[in-house]
Amino acid sequence: MVETIQYEPIRELGNVEIRRYPAIIVAKVMDPEADSFSLLYKFITGKNSQKVKVQMTSPVVSQKIAMTSPVLAETGSMAFVMPKELTLETTPQPLDERVKIALIPSRTLAVLCFSGGWSEKHFEKETDELLNELAKAGIKTKGNVFTMLYNPPYIPGFLRRNEVAIEIEETKK
Image 1 (cartoon, rainbow, N blue to C red):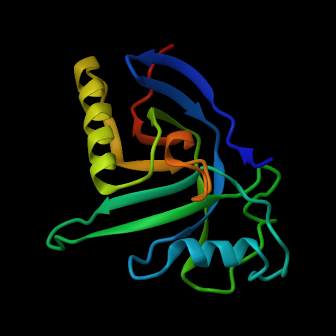
Image 2: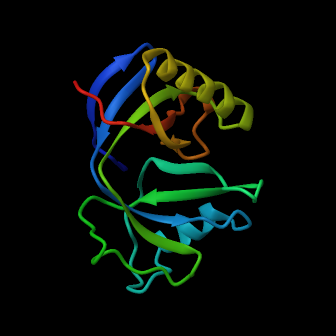
């Protein structure tokens, strides 16, 4: 069974759940031209400094990042969450320079769950619903919306667990 990040549910706003996540270590690729999934898969299957396999965890995190001006293009990132027993010091170092190890501090996220396959249109629809619900509640966001994908591609779309999420300013329970 695949390890999944444990979080603390805080409250619900319609279809949106507010959650508190612990700090996590990720292996990430920020190169929009790279096959991010393949690079990360190679890293966890032994293409690393210790030549060890790293247990697969979920979710796989993917993000569209709006660039600051004057650059108008967008780029993407993908990250695999490392098992909770690994730290920055004990996580094997990638052999491919496009793969980076990073610490994501503890944070509060607003999350909207949905099923089905991933598509740009589906992402935009769910993102609109998430952001509209937060706006109605007067909750301020930080950063960009990202996806968290929990299932391998061979799982039928109607059985897949997907989420769109965004960091929010701290809220009271």
